[in-house]
Image (cartoon, rainbow, N blue to C red; front, side, top):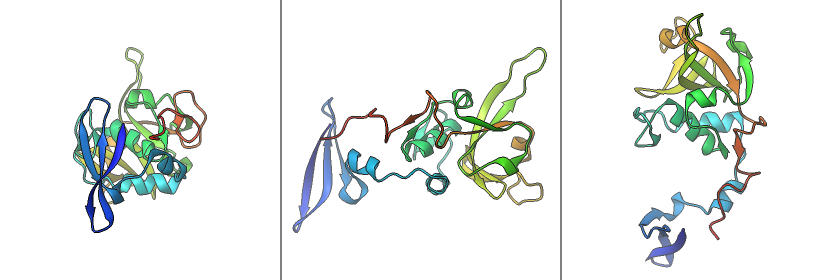
Length: 198
């Protein structure tokens, strides 16, 4: 990808022009862009940064297969939160559940930390395998954030205004992926998955 400054207002550049390898061009406001190396060097993934990032997406509509602010599904949402904090996790909830460290399988939410992923679905029986169909992220105060109809905050606490009995009843387990070593997790600050724009 080539980058060139575009459109001058007085003596200040206001847009950056991007030219992709296939010839497509695009423009972005200068204040809304940074070079990859600058972005990656400025990251400090933490529980709080994950929560802050997740809340910027509240209200984004649900779209199966989506991973953008135009629409996202549940696992696209969790993948986006982590990617914006410099960590690549697998794409689907059924893959994400196999990463990181196990934290809870018994609805003992006191064990959870902000940023932990909660998985929902159908428990295994004698005749059927477990099926993971939904994922959200713990944000503390007995609440998790997830893409369901839209990105929203739900509670595991009965009596709360945003109590989510449906997902409480199909809860399977929680996993911790922040600061975990796992071959399915890629920390962009330690892995040069994307080349520098220079």
